[in-house]
Length: 184
Image (cartoon, helix red, strand yellow):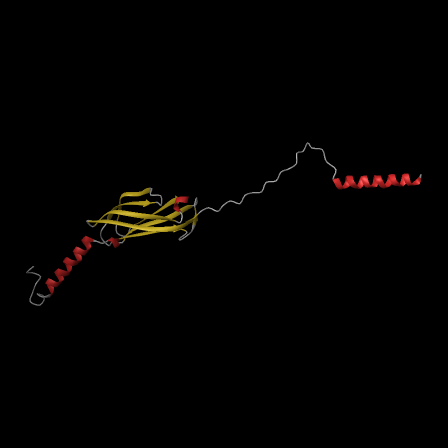
């Protein structure tokens, strides 16, 4: 240390060293913002009907300049089930991993289905746990409209003569008979 210091920089060197210590400590500690999470349904913000499938696009990025992160990544679905996406994955600075998951909505998800991405592990000697959720509206399926049913007459029934034609024939018969009787 004596080789570095001289009369001109005796005041500035302790400040520079203090600054180096602070910067080193901040880098070693890291922060939750060193891992960035992204999650959205595809298409974003869509409304679903119970029975339809939601597709989720997921992203985890290590934004730290020097520290790698070793993490587990999983997705928790609206029904409480989970899907492990990665276990013990190493994300070096600048690494990005993406995943796609799907969930089929049910009547239990009405009025909304909420899904969450979870990341847990270690970065720069510090424990990290992050979660990011998204929700989509879920509606009940439409009530089906009953289809009208029509009955068809059996095919073995002989054709019937309409009553109006029978009455007309009978009337003509009476008129004809009256003409014959009236001639006598």
